[in-house]
Amino acid sequence: MTHPSRSSRRAAALVACTAVLLLAGCTPEAQTPQPGKAALAKPVAAPVAAPAADTAIRPDWKSSAYLALGCTTRAEWVAEGLPGDAWDAETVQTSFADVTGDGTDEALVQLTCPTPTSTLSAHVVVVDLSAARPAVIGVLGDELFHPQATVTTDGTTITLSGPTVAGDDPYCCPGHWGTVTYAWDGDAFAVRTASEAPGTTPATSARLADGEHVGMLLSVAPGRVTVLVVDWFEGAAAAAACREDDVPDHETAWCNEYYVRDGGERTATLPVSDSASLSYLDLGTLDDVAIDDVAELAGTHWVSENPEAAGYTRFRTEDGAITALESIYTP
Image: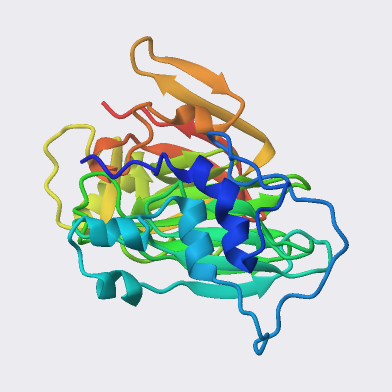
């Protein structure tokens, strides 16, 4: 399926969004985000406290965030013959946290642009409050399609997590779970990790026992994988497990060379050690190909959000991280 494209009006909108916040004109530091950038450079200014709940002049978070994201304005909405009260009913959620490490809280405005016909992805607009005029320094949420997202912060990181629309999911019914974490690097927010896998609950964060495991890779990202771990048997152990499960032996590789027991699957998202030994099997040449990062596996036979379509991968973990990974050839 094809999901809605990101708004092309965001660049022009960011120029004016600060004026909406304080009704006092635009900040000269506001910049247009470049493609692939999650945020803008933070302006240098003397830090001031975040606005108190009873401030006499309250910033208009909704209008400024809508402008930064390029949402349809109320005037445009009504001009299209849509009821104004429907636009008015849309709300934003605002929280405050120091996500740049400068000792002053930023505002995190969570929103979804209103639309009369389809579902759009949730975003977070990050507003710097340390200057005399607040400035938008981040528009987060383009990487995954979250109809709604839970937003959490930890130091200078912001994480969006929740059900996502991906693959053949209809807009009404997200069939995946996705998590993306952004980190402030001193100039901008950059994606630190991102994962997405079939299912409507998060992959377990419980650490796998140290040792060897087998599974199907559901997604890969730099330094991280989401894997469906299975109960795997080989050789004599495979034959014994088939007998225990009353699985008939048809004198094929299944039940003689290998066997996967139903019901033992669990999904886990795991970091990959910087020194891990990584490779995959090229099915065209049957050669093992060494790689530097698991992200290089994207697009190969060994990674698929549909577990039935992916090959089996053997990996070893130590202290919760993958230290070795290779493909398993199954005839």
